[in-house]
Amino acid sequence: MLVGYGRVSTTNQSLDIQHETLLAAGCEKVFSEKLSGRSTTDRDQLNDALDFVREGDTFVVTRLDRLARSVGDLHRIIERLTEKKVAFRCLNQSGVDTDTSTGRLMLSILGAVAAFENDIRRERQLEGIEKAKLAGKYRGRPASIDTERVKALKETGMGAAQIAKAMNIGRASVYRALAA
Image 1 (cartoon, rainbow, N blue to C red):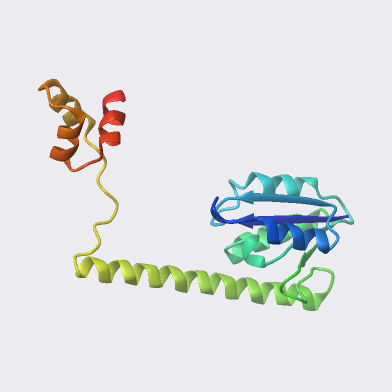
Image 2 (image 1 turned 120 degrees about the vertical axis):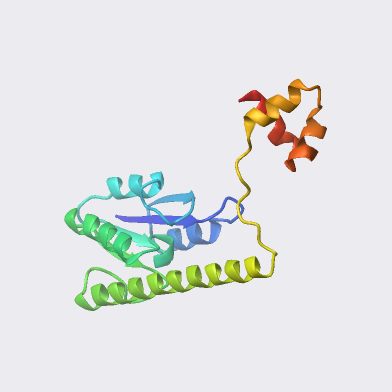
């Protein structure tokens, strides 16, 4: 049995193309989710798919980055499949399947390249943040709200809008702080 897995990172992205591609490839069952790929531990559909597959099945994805973002995660997933005697195939990176030694080699190489690209992307992001900080255009994550101060200001008779302005936060944050 061919078992497919699809994933997109955000809820505003569509799984339709991956789903259609997996069905066109002959997958009888497709697991999919809208969730970041940085970690495999919190991806319920991936874990359900890995639990579902049985000896002789083939686990199919459209692209490696839909399955794992690090070489370590990729190898752990492939090892889990191998222990269950389940083959692995990646549709858009031809030659990536665990049925052949060449396919296993390609899988390792592409996994390493994907990890490298992820590291470069992260470095560029950090460089951009640093540049923005130097230019005074980056404030970073706002400090957590001092709920005690919000409550103290409320006791003085200030309204939510006044508290929000005084603390440079949104009114909704004031209401959340008061409810805490």
